[in-house]
Amino acid sequence: MARIGYWQYMVDKQGNPLQDAEVRVYLAGTNDEANIYLNSTFGSFTTSSVIDLKTNKFGFVQFWVGDKWETEGGYDVTQQFKIVWQNIVDSIQEEIDNLYLFTPVRPIVTSDDVRGVPSNVDEDKVISNKQGYKWDTHVDSIVPSSAPHDLNPVVFFDLNGKPNRIISDKIGYQMYTMAELASITPIDISAARFHGETVSLWTTSGGKFYSDINHNFNNYYPTVSVVKASDLHEIIPEKIESIDMDNIRIWLENNIVVEVSVFG
Image (tube, rainbow, N blue to C red; front, top):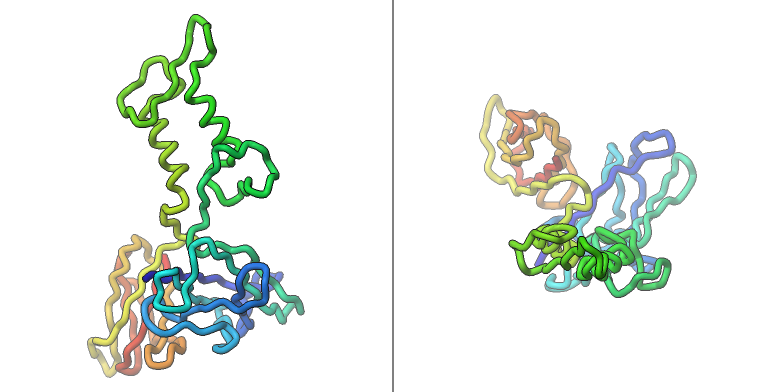
């Protein structure tokens, strides 16, 4: 099984964080609540209204969605979602609909060369169907026919052929393969790297407790979220410090088990 994480910072029209903004997660185009999880690895699914999902004081909200291999509550990778939140500062309700959480890139359909037809949805592809169609039909042809400088068609599965072609066979093979496999290539939709870790062992110093987290983000300023494992409530550490570009140190007043999420 696998769970896909989604996070966002909600802000008002002035760009200020929306604290305690009510957030609801639905299936795309409906008001049917989606099954969500509060942790990337453990816990049962719930819904955003049951737990009254809200942003923290920074406007931050996060949840996970299970794929079809979850024991229960998961979805197929083609399922889209709708995120709705209350902007009480500006007295409006805002939403993002038709959101892909599993894989935001769909495969091209090279037989579909007409823009605007139902099957030709280009905004979620590496290239448009029409571009793929033109590429597929032209790159295999001798161009121009019967001219002195005829160009041979590209042979996608011959990685060595180069002469008399628009591009080399190897480049053609790589480009074609990338377009075909785009729908199953993992892409981080949040545009950030993620590291999750359960911390149960702490080192004591001066009556405080600390633990070092190795995230390997090559970043002195990652975003860190800490929740208490027993009730999944977010807590504010005594201090969070960067040891170097790949490690942080978290300080707590109490020796408790926590779930740490680091975004880089």
